[in-house]
Length: 416
Ligand code: FCB
Image (cartoon, helix red, strand yellow):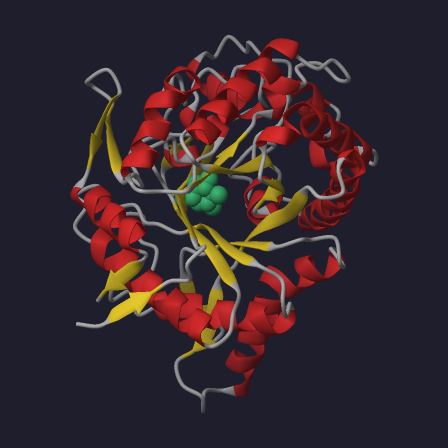
């Protein structure tokens, strides 16, 4: 057994997002899409809100409903984070609640999030707050959402308001979560609202999201130049099976890796104070196809490859020397909690190795604190360190891995 120690001021946390845990996010495009299937009376005015058929399944598999009711139970959730010996937490605030109509901000909802953030701060948790985590207000979706030419202005206005109203309680602002996952799902394969299959629009939305991030960055800084602002990027590690592999496969790997990160990150220029990295899986390319060994997979069939995380960190360390990096999401669907402890240890070992090689990783947020609404899949993928009993009044029950993660965070080291 070896001990892997982490830097003294390392941040340990978990990550969640509003729509996935709060419940009753009724003013959002996601809620509208969910209802369009479950209440065929067409209660919403967004066009083209249809279920999507893939692999004989009709998505979304179920609506989010009350989710984990964290809108009301946030204190209980933060207590669980304290039980994990965490010193930070990543949550998101919901644009659809805060700006229910264009240019009309809700005092009531800002007051709500002030209570939420104060509750986290009171418990000694540094707050990482995402402003956009996949869901949009209905008014925004009806205006064409992220394809709208004025999207940067709209997003910057909302971001500035968040900085003004909540900034004193926020340690770190994250503008947008996984912009390229959002565009892939919403505009390339049509799985998520607005359910478009249109590569040109997908490209356009990526450019718009990069622009909107930059506008939001400046808007938040105009409120207080010391506020920390960054973005969260999902990155997949691609590689061939061996170094001597066919040059076309090598080329494909380079291309995919560029498309999935450099292409987007380069558009942000210097307007990032840190990089948030979400890492879930890697992909191997053989004969110009993704062909993973799948020797270790999650309940969702995602190939688990901890070394991929170190490789990405080394790449980011080189690309952005001196810029702090946070692992803003990393976790697995594992309903029996059979693999989570091993997963945690191996991922953290990989991070520790990158830190030893000089990469400035400053914190780790496990996805997720609670079992939650996993988008089109509904509730069956179980990502939580804490089980949420959906038949038992949403009672929270820590899993074995919860206690193991608590040990790691409390001791600031991993034994593996
Ligand atoms: C990420 C999302 C997050 C969650 C995990 C499993 O892509 O940011 O909301 O769904 O995947």
